[in-house]
Structures are given as C-alpha cells and as structure tokens.
Image (cartoon, rainbow, N blue to C red; front, side, top):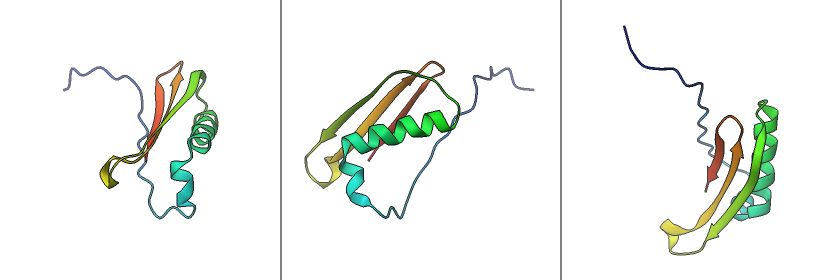
Length: 78
C-alpha cells in the first residue's frame, strides 16, 4: 500500500499534425487558446495569460504561454 498523497489530476497533451502551424508562433492566439482550454475544463483563471516569444536557432525558437489558475497553472510551449 502506498503512502503517497493524492493532489489531483494532471492533464498533459502532446499535439501533432497541426493544420495551422503559423499559430504556434502567435502569442495572442496561444494566450486565447489557453483561456478557452482552461474554461472548457471548468478551471478558474487567477491571472494571465502571460506570453513570450524566443527567436534563436531552430532548437531555441518558439512561444510559451502561462495562466495562473486558482487550482494550479496551465502552460503551453511550442
């Protein structure tokens, strides 16, 4: 029998074959996507979204978006 404490469920998504790949580098779109996602699963937004974009070499280019939730947080990294 485990002595681990249960802190709730986690949802991890790995999304492939994205039709509109240009949106992966659109900070505004990613922020709106996260707001829609967390509201659709019944979570409550405390703050955000906060977004950022890095332009570097191929391995260091992309966007991140973060929303603080009353329950936890939601993030996306491209």
